[in-house]
Image (cartoon, rainbow, N blue to C red; front, side, top):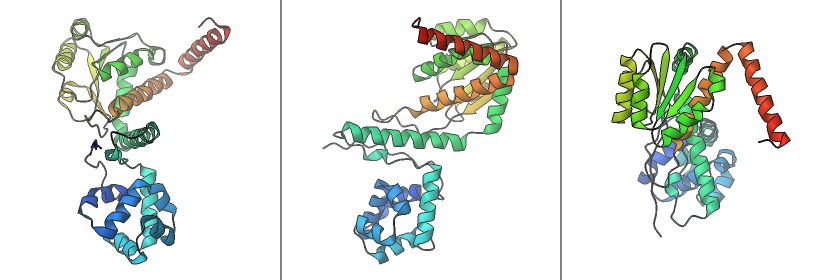
Length: 296
């Protein structure tokens, strides 16, 4: 049986006890290792189980459990459970590294859903809200929006274009590098390019962004880190996820970027005032009527 490993560097500090257990697991032996494996396999159970239930599930003695708690820096079993609950509330980067090539669809579904939810929670906690506010202000002041992206980021760009009623200004999107350069060359002050790239290192995308700035347009970048493209951004919105290039790992960076578009489009729409919101509501009502009447 082939094991497909997708190990990730833990994204949280040791205040998250589950991440700490995952980090030290390779160094553990015997009873402590059995207990760590059991906890990571079903953290929800161990967050609420009694001492006896923990021992029975992990097949270890009470002294082993208490030594394990002390090793983690807990002042007893009660504090261990409290920190378990806190970690689950924060979101634990699931043990996606346990994916086997022969996992059945139910197992794959559970692990990918857990991984995706935990990854997006990391995005939520690391997102700089003050930068979000700057991005919204920039978009509100823009007279035209151009969304640029390649590959998975192109999906986000075209999704953003579909939300133009919420933005309240003309929007377009392109994934073609030549078209991006042409569009950037025709921009003017008041226009804004939204460049979407998790890596932020695409040479052709950076070139298009540079041309847009030369034309006097503003640039908002949605990326996964302090990447090269942020150098040319008026506002750099970082949506960090524990991305992994393994084939079996879900593309959480795309989901995080889509969430950023939701945040921005909704916030901009709310900034437009009640008249704009009423226009959007009227539009949605007409679409709903068409669907129920069978026109769509």
